[in-house]
Image 1 (cartoon, rainbow, N blue to C red):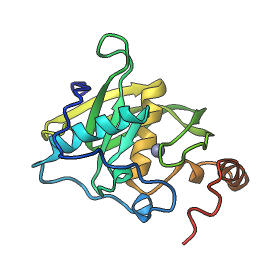
Image 2 (image 1 turned 90 degrees about the vertical axis):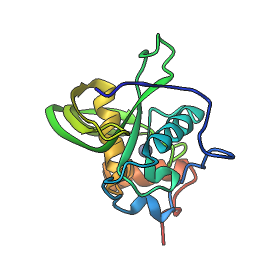
Image 3 (image 1 turned 30 degrees about the vertical axis):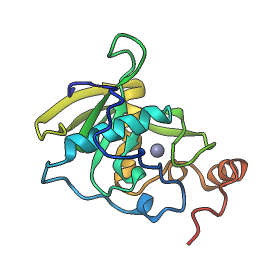
Image 4 (image 1 turned 90 degrees about the horizontal axis):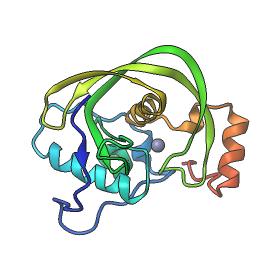
Length: 184
Ligand SMILES: [Zn+2]
């Protein structure tokens, strides 16, 4: 697993943190590009970690802050001593599913108020690069495997509402006041 990044509160970008894009933003429905030039990626990774913690998210994908690159941040519970304020960031992540499929409740910072039971493989072999471009590979299970798969979906323009039967998605969007937000 890549080294965990501490929450620093020292944002290398000037000004406020970028806003999280929500349903209806076309960037959430676009396939993000592979990263081949890593200049500026460590700084972007730190911004993503800050935004994720600011909103209490379990993970964040770059397209959610308007950056169409294959970069994800995932919270690592307890890795900094127990308060859950560390994260790993993976560039060009890939997950090879393993294990049985399991249902679990998921939310999404881009779909505020929407919670859905999503069926995913319970574990995965994850590979990718650190924000500095170093190769990394590890086995993920449990919540970590679920969140990584959720964030990789974002890189392909897929949202949790696409992973459940349509009536369940409509009902959750309606309850959250988002029904119609994704229409063009
Ligand atoms: Zn999400």
